[in-house]
Length: 381
Ligand code: UD1
Image (cartoon, rainbow, N blue to C red; front, side, top):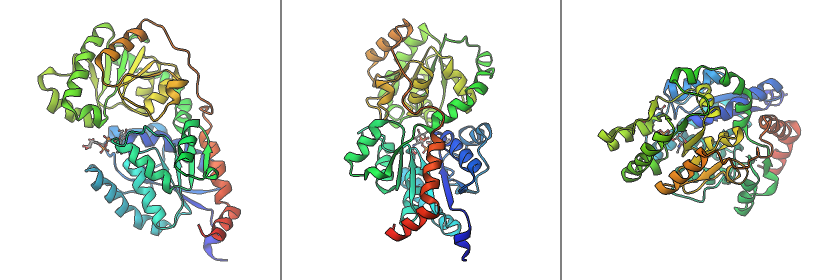
């Protein structure tokens, strides 16, 4: 019998940037524990700093990558092209039966394209999210990845509606829940045991957390200045902790100059556990991140999102998220409301229960098992 038929089906999981790591961690753990598929991990190297990458591998128990493509920073075209170029020989050598990608970063779309061009099917975890704002690089990454993926694993019902509208066949779409919440559920007890608040001299429930890194906020000097003028005012009512993303650090240095960061308590990018501890005990959170909208919804902490849209509508309809755009008056009003304690009704969205990775593993095992493989060969895909 040829070797190919005796080995377990092989899966390559791809991660590249910080928000990928908490999504890939439960998938790898569950797939390896179940043992039906052989899994390998490729790190594209999109994020490469200790603070943006290594720390997450260590804290979340992610195994050492089997391959690191080491692409580093660059323009979108450069970064995407480098991942494509460096991924192809890895796929040739490893000959996986499928590739799993997560989220919406450049690594997600580039690895998917490299795989499908070689006839290797792609599974996209966190498929179908749409901001309907094509000026966001992540939106383009989502649209492309979903069009070429064979399995589309979704986190909320609206995602399926988006995919069906774009002509994706329903049988490819699987509503499985949220792998990022799998990680949160697992790590919350460890995070709560951290001395993060003591180190930063903060009291539970008496501070806000700020994160800001979207190009639409930090690359536009006018908008950034406006935001910081309001933050200075908010800071008078509640101290704000601000872990600064490397991209934002550059913008702050060159754009804000002597205006500085409005007296906010700035820190370097934090590890997963410290950041989760901060979120869990915060009075409110101000952010332009995608993932943090979901984490605060799960934790029941008010989240004010400094964007005009969200690709994660369930965090607004069910969760604690409010879109405040870039309008200072709206932001201030929303902060006052959150501080006044008029907490909104909220619920944890369906299937955000810590078991999404199990559901994904079961589907992949079913479809990549011998029967699945025979079916795929028979249908020529
Ligand atoms: C990327 C993702 C974004 C995600 C964010 C989380 C895309 C299109 N965007 O944006 O969806 O929310 O990651 O962090 O993929 N840098 C470092 N050290 C690092 C990584 C980056 O200093 O380890 C600096 C680089 O100089 C780089 C800048 O940060 O130019 C931006 O990094 P990049 O990965 O290009 O995009 P992000 O803005 O981080």
